[in-house]
Amino acid sequence: MKISIINSGTKICWNNNSQQICKEYKFPIMDYEILPNNSGIIVLEPYEEVGPNNAVIYNIDGTVRWKLPYPKETSSGICFDRVGFSKGELNVIAVIKNRDVGFIVDWENYKYKEIFSAR
Image (cartoon, rainbow, N blue to C red; front, side, top):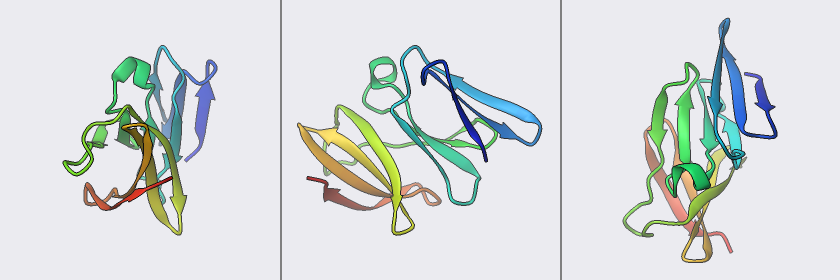
């Protein structure tokens, strides 16, 4: 999967077969990561526009697979602000009560494997 970031980060596009899929915002996206099996992409949408629940996994066809929630253990945060893979696992970092909280995401089963302090 090839990702294109357009208009100073306010638009993200990818191809699904011969169809181009794009998500466009007023503000730049915060981060993104392609899922290892190329079945989709996680996008950290601009929190200024969508609010604190800004981490969304999109299927390759552009439909929403899972909008990551804040679990009961943490309370709601300001936003999810970083995403990446570490040791083969999807990690998402959120700002919650002025602290960085990390989540190891089981993106295939729609749950968190682990929650940890990232600072």
